Image (cartoon, rainbow, N blue to C red; front, side, top):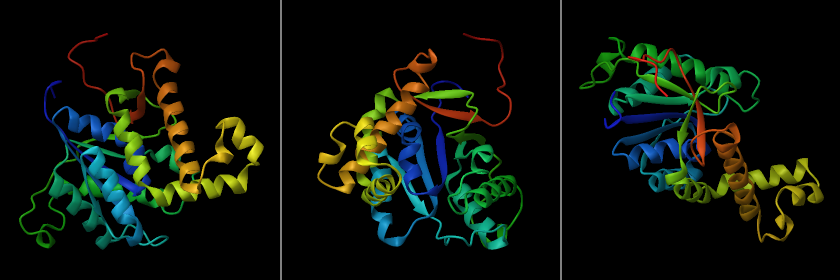
Length: 251
């Protein structure tokens, strides 16, 4: 694909917050003329308007796959849900969780969701369940990028859309509030103050959670770029599945 080719990107997200976490790549794709989608596996109905709004800020259309916590499996029904999202959006690129990093991650459903995503990608390009999806043709397995990998092999320039990523996080009040409450259980106010000066004076758990997430995301973005002697001011790290196919070596 040429540098100027318009691409369709689909994020397969375990949780709604991942829409903002991969928001740099999603928004940058839209900024360059592409189309970005997100399909969220687990999101309680009361939180969905916030996740949809975060996607809107980034220019990405968000859909919800209506799975239940602790009940995701490699069933026929589950595969059909994910394959439908793939065939309807026809992505050139899929972003999903890194199979390596989720093995020791204790959020529910992450491990089985990775397997479900990979199985759905394998089946989406074949004649599986065509009768259950009238009008939708097979869509071959697209290029896969793993988000927040332990061993990234590429980074995406998100400096031009960083302000959109911040705004997307600001829409996720449920996640910001939960994060602040989680931090309060884990760390003393003095330790939190050392990380974020003025943390304890912020007016609400929402503001404290947002301050933490913005700091965390920017720290990671600097580490993946300037902190690694890179070419960008801010970047999101990814791991591309498979080999890069180059006509020749380049700078």
